[in-house]
Length: 392
Image (cartoon, rainbow, N blue to C red; front, side):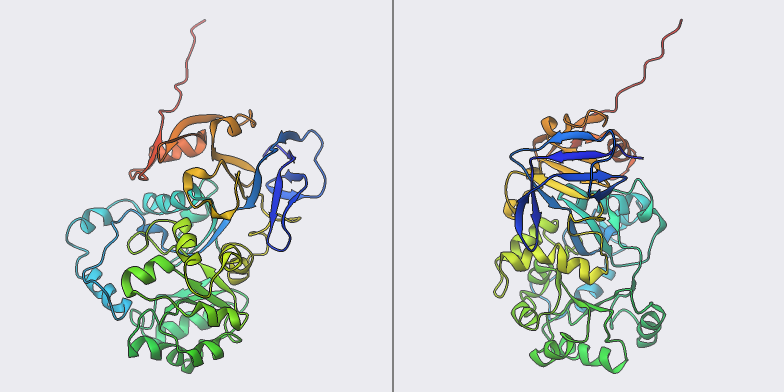
């Protein structure tokens, strides 16, 4: 059980109201209305508290690979997939594939936590390790998925869609290209009976205006991965039309195999794109992302929400992971600036640096980082304190 907290004097970000000054009460990892008896009072005057970011699309086990492509621009991501598959037994991919799955997944989770993304949708099997208490981030549990209409058979796609409960999101890479194949995929999926209120389209670059007009009222939403789209295809989906139709658009970081880095890079690139403004981007990693994932307790800091939040001295445009002064998950500070972490004396910490900036990190997370056979670039964590035993 975590120590209840009473956060005072901070400004709390709200997707509807902007920032408002109010106290934040946390008990058992949730936002509550009143301070618990004996709650620890923490003064965060001068800081703004934001809900933890939501990453609506990641392949958590692929974030230790180098960013890779084998031609300048692809007509379709299926071509990239075939190119990638042909090289999996060559270096460096062969060696990187050999790392334990639990460590590959952990590094993907850590990548997200360090940029302030505390909730992630993993596109792939629901590996048990992702739902362990010591996993760095909260991973969507209730979901269905298929990879794509290229790397799955139509029968596999239909079976996956049909066995997914209708109130769970069902994800598929769709229309990830600029060619006629990509342009045809939405209608193919619709003909298979797999376009419905739980369908989540990932990428959607090749969808026509008619497709978007039809999909906007039929599907749960679109997940947009700006840096992957530019890297592979040199084109973005028509975000302006999706927004014009009042559809939910969420942001995803994909994996470092094709993306620039983390979710902050997607926010930065997304904010440059036609048809998207600061409200579009902030909602795509908070309220609208929560709607796409079907998660009611993330993306905000209202009553009953999970106590997942970041603290910074500026608005959402900070866009450097080292600029997060404090990152909290389940009401427990995980990593932050030394002076802020010191406001939580019950948390045992270890010194660290993140992209050259001094930090301190929760000892349990530090221990897991040291145990991992993979390392996160830019993160250095000091050795754990040694226990001393006295002979009496």
